[in-house]
Image (tube, rainbow, N blue to C red; front, side):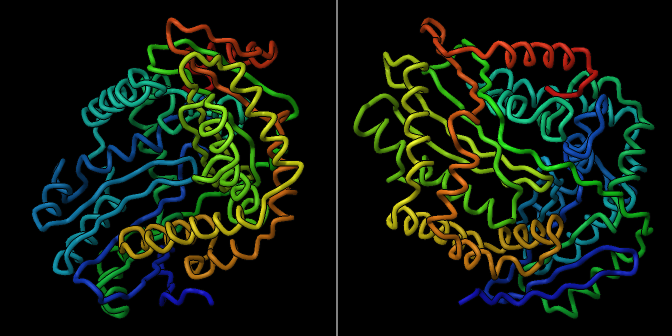
Length: 452
């Protein structure tokens, strides 16, 4: 039986879509905005802009001083932050009911009139903040650039998902104030934004307040959304090997998957769970518990909205185990699973694990509002939180096996191998892939391609 959260969906005259889930279980309201712009919408030579605005949005707007958004809402006991991803930028505030209109007013002020505060001084300051973030989170963190390197291998140069969300520092250095203003005017329009509200507020009250604060924002055109042609599985393996100051060698093995929010994606993501995402997964049992080639195995599926998604495995080599040996054994297990598919126990475990995490997430107003915004903004489906588990439960073992056979064969893999300094990294190099990675790195350094 589907879940039955009450969802009310309306659109203001200026194009802002507002989705409300009334829930009086606790005196808290979650305010969540999804803007349909992420790193995949950036043009070559102008990457990093979506993430830059995640920072600039906290530096003040027409009626709000720099830093005041955090200070004012936290003084009322609120939680707030923002995130940037390939497909969207997200701003969220979770506040006591009495601060609901304050949160709306502050969000409306910066979504409608941010540019009053985007001065050259603020731009220069936040460029430096982003550079420091890149140093801390990526360049100087163990395995920090592994996933960014994997994106560049899995998705070809020029593809919207080839470069990471943080973008190119050379592109940010070259950005003018007018470039930044133009990006905001193009993407930050009401028609490109979804506001989801979940919590202790009645539907009429919520819409009256939203109309009061967001209604005056000028409409602006909805950005043109031209889909990228779907990507098929990679035709041949690609490898990138590095030696770094890390405690243990690791393999990051990536695969293209079908576009998110489709039955094919759910089947492929289930296959990834069977391989490495469960305590009973194939690679966990074989590589960690039985053969002791790896210290741990994990799996992830990143559902993406523009023609392709990403699945990846992370394998940390046990002491004394060469990465080449670990990769060879993992590939044999991956192909064996593609041949045989999941067992009934595998399917039961996937559904149980997903159901537990899904229901646990929806129990949080903050996460529920975020999920509503996700499916409304990217897939025009505000009711998806009620149907997701039923759609997953309808995926059969045969569909999972078929998805694994089509997308998760070892021949389709892209591998980033990170060896610990002092250990020998022995991973078969694909000459063409290495040459492309070097060429891509040169273009990034010049700021021409815009990936980092």
